[in-house]
Length: 289
Length: 162
Image (tube, each protein chain N blue to C red):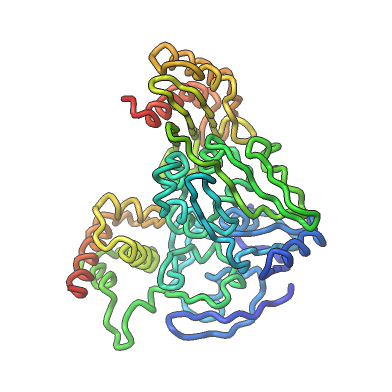
């Protein structure tokens, strides 16, 4: 039973990245980093306890979102979901990410919650996580030992576990430059709008005329982490996206996902709708109706 | 727990306060500063009763914000919207004129959320209002009048700026 009262902890508020790295190096698994706090505080109110919490919100210059047509998108650790939504570049070049930000939680949460926080939470239901997975990219992790870049494909290890070591701080997300013939879309299924997803899907395709030359497909709420549909992707490459191809794609998704029954939906339902949901996302990306 | 000293501006007045790190902004407003107009609803960022305006710009859930991380910020609560002479904010006027209040518990959050919308989008459509008010729950279910009030408030602000 939750009291919804925050238990006791020490709060550390570094003003620079080196200070933050020193704190992480000292306290390791005993400190939880907080950016927007919209997930961590809820967890704390429901029984998660920590000896130390480190807020990174006072570190300046981490709230950037910058787009360069050649280098792609760079998003700092304090950049909020609202910033994604307010970005014309994201809307134009990364529609899947923009669409996932648009339906993300509520305006208040979007004003506090960060994109990197959503990725690091490692929830299988993260809407922006699903979109970023389909778009591809990497997370920059820094520690006192140096800096490394982890591919988004390698970020999520298991439910709520990531590749980040406890002495590392995630400071930036990098998403590659958009392909001129690239198309992406995101879709989510919920009971009511404000609820967490019972299923979400994002697609990122490169088209050469009618033919698909590159595909990344991601689905959420169907495995312990967001899931890339690698077998299904192969069915799209080199193909014209006609009815028979889409039929094979729909059949393949069901085999690739591994959903469970929980309070939001059942495994059976998720399997039943996964194919049609993916097809609709592909149609949305390619303006097929 | 080591206490934190912060400077918090609330409705124009600066407060130098020393607080426990596990206090939310909502705890501080209600219990330390004795400003109960900001309401506690769910405590988990779903109902919007605790909504406040930060730096005259963005609305947040004060129940999910650690007060110690708000050093130097300027907070507006529903009681801070009126002028020093006591003239209501156009959004407050519109809520009164439209009777967009039933039990009143969600009202401070609804009003601040609406102020936040009109700052971004002075002339929102009904759909935009409904979408923006997601995250603010009225359990009397008086949404129709609230939506009309926000539309009216937009017109009032446009006229005043005229």
